[in-house]
Length: 167
Image (cartoon, rainbow, N blue to C red):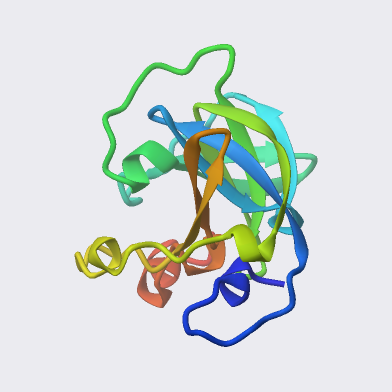
């Protein structure tokens, strides 16, 4: 089930489903991804750098015999880099049928919300032409806005091919 299907884009009524999101921090902003996409959350291991990869690909790790590409969410979103610390984590997620790791500043919690509480992102934000189609909604969480993402839509087909099958 994708959160994008849960966001009301027109006036039609939809089932008010209970969904779970894993929330994480990135540059003092809170993001969420559907819990079913998350395979596990790990501490920062040693990352092996790969030549000729896009800037946001940090490298690869070996996770129980599987080679997993590691992506810096800060670089992917064009945010200023910072040093990894004790809270830095890698979220291993299923992205379009392949596993990938995403470096985030911290993992916060698992949030249970009703789909009716998710608001679509403002069209002005999405019309910027900077590839924000992976933002599927916004949720008001504890007086903060949580940005809901669909990781399957984070990378274009061209980017997946550029990764040489890594994603």
